[in-house]
Image (cartoon, rainbow over all chains, first blue to last red; front, side, top):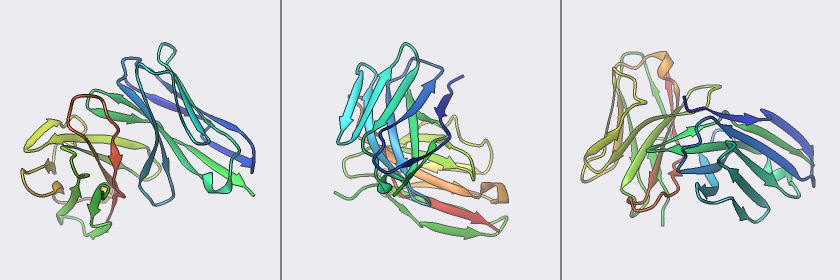
Length: 110
Length: 115
């Protein structure tokens, strides 16, 4: 069964801290992995996509890594800001569909 | 280049009515996906369509739900005889034509409330 798990479920940090969000998946036969951000009552914003052949992707203060063999990905956020507060979703592509984790709710306190 | 568009953004229906949700993919995208986010749950895949074809409907409930993506016009997710358990946010995503694995870009969602 294809399952995606995200840890922690919620995280509260003071502004300026570096932080890591974790994602694990049970089936390593993935096409790619995407990290999304979702604000309350809003849609999903794609942050980073890592192809199955890649090890990491970077965009600004965000860095995502992928270890396909161990079924893990991490999203690293540097110098967190209050505007980073949102739910972060990890999604793994299998064939035609994305399988989502339950998300990590991040709160950055000013 | 407009993103994925969904309408309506909010839809209220009484039990037994029909709900029609529309999705216009990004320009140049020919693949459409529908996902459902139930309250306090994660997003779940429902169906994947290309123009005039349903490719994968493994996540669609067996009854009352249908989807189409006609040659012209938006993709439609149709829910017949809605029940309270259908209340959820329905998201549409699109991706470019096949050739390489590409990102799925999501619309803002339609929030369906069944009274």
